[in-house]
Image (cartoon, rainbow, N blue to C red; front, side, top):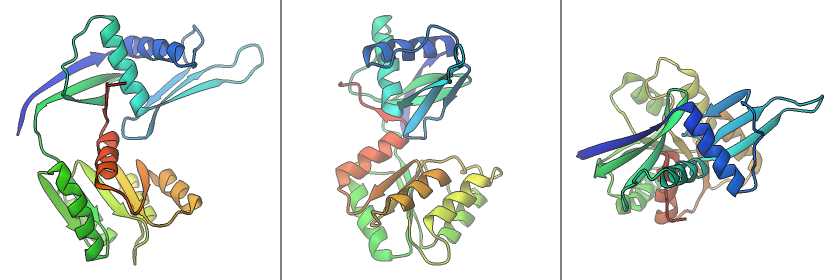
Length: 240
């Protein structure tokens, strides 16, 4: 049960200032002009792209930041402005209108994970790996087709989806393509981690292009899997 949720909001100007300051500290100094575009999607590993227009016949400049970069930038902005951040509390980066926000969950909300794999033995292995995170609910689907039906119906509302890449009838890439394209599906923007034993980078890149939040290569440890789940949910560590 979620006991309390606190949110610190960063309007666009504050968000951009936080990223400028972070960029200066990390060899990514940005031009002192307004950007032409700012694209932010916390569900993606590289979640923020800031674009500046071309100057004097040059080319436009883009600065890319990971989800963790954004988390650290916002946390540093809070420290610089003496905004208290509770210690030992899960912190999550979120999109807020045209800016960003840090949300903090006080208590244990529990996590709902959906596992999609056509092999029961693999679903059992993944469930065992997840026990360390103590998820509140685990939903299984033995095919991508069945998973899409469950997600479309609204009967399930997972926080994160773990999907195998190579399956019969419909593979993980096709599942992603259909899920992301279905705007009527309330789950179409949920984070999806693709799990695969295939080390072919082209297959990984295709999955990312189809909308995978992350592609993970099996075998994977429980700690690594749980860490990646937390990352795609927007959580970050402030210990650095």
